[in-house]
Image (tube, rainbow, N blue to C red):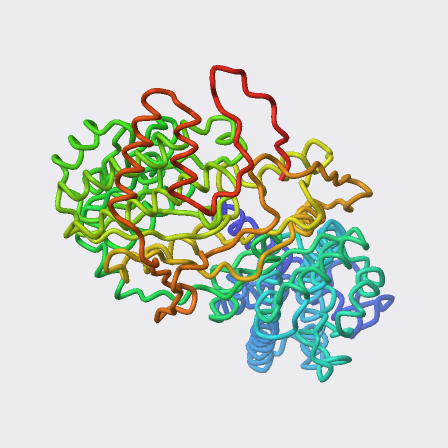
Length: 632
């Protein structure tokens, strides 16, 4: 079809050139001899038919010689017009030569004919070019009118790369209109043809003046306070705030794959990127069989991803949640061959199943992430928390020791420190059991303790998002409630490095940064969703839930906390403890759980964890658990 259109275009130009050459000769003769001259009587042009035919043929041959019919005149430029002028000049020179030899017309007529030919031939070609330009211009104006007008925040390298990206990708449907930059030296100047109108205090004015529908952040130094201020300004102007690439991409000046995306909570809780000891982690897991309990959960599945990425020979994903195993299988199956991983369905409370798995696959590294973690739910099911978190951990740890695993890493929580709930107390007992087993085993057993992770199942962020989607209210337990937060990938990276550091008996504590007010977190999420807190979406305070504290701690008073080569990882070494007494209390607790003696079980918990501050958790003594408040 394209070849047909090209041939049709050439034929039309040939037809036009035939008419142009003939008309030029006729008009040229008329201009020379006068249109009302007697010479124009019938028979005058007929007697010069051979000359007219010669002029037409010579022009066509010269156009072919100069490849004028190969040009795309709708996109023509100076080279095409110079070739056409050269063709007409050459045809005129040939006609002059013929006139000198045969004396059939005066020379001055040929000059007139040449000028007329040039006007006729170039006019139609220029008209095609102008028509195409006008059509493109009209289309461009229509497209631009439908485009989102964009203010780019940051006129540095990232901002100029974003400008070029948008200019070269009209399918983005974004039209940059100006820059905002905090560097006063840039104000009043132009970058890529766009004005830098001022700093942060001019952002609202720029949005209004340029009728912007979007602000895109392209600056690497945007901290938490700056992002919140920009979000508030943009929200007040009803203008969404987005970012260009991740902070790491901007810092690395790697913009080729950078994308425009919505601002998210991780940006507002910005933390420095993890500086991982890649070599140590690779030596830790590469070429080894690694088992992850709770491997279908939020933390466990990320451990699975990163372990395979670091070159584990085989990954064993152990979980009781079959739907979660199905999902992780779909994900891993798209990236790795089937022999690189195995999906193992089972419960950590089933010691026989664990012994079977460990005996068959002989894992060298074990990450124990399986646990009951939901604080209010465990307050109403405390015995299940103890059975799973304490004795499930013991089952996995003993199976690892019996299989001569090199390392066992327990994923613990900051709620184990001075616990105010049975979940935290059960995790603290699990830590004690791990430290106790480490003293009598060649397997190196350690624990990693950290706080809340963003986006994990059952965490506050997805809960708030659902409340916002429903139109509110967003429920916060207390205006002074604070929590530590970390992204899942960041937490797992630090878990892997802590595992590489482990020599047995340590409790590693991750630096979670500054604690965050849950109220501020709720406000940020509401603004990110395009609403105004307490105006569009109401925030309600509902009171502390059973087992909750206003502020979580990360280490016990008796623990010796020391630094490691990684600034974000600390080691808590336990003070002295009575091993025999702990063994006896754990076995006593096991007996009470088997008998269903809740009071005896709680007495054991308080003896094992003297800092357990619960005033008395509800029990699942055959009673129906009341509905508890699910606010954050």
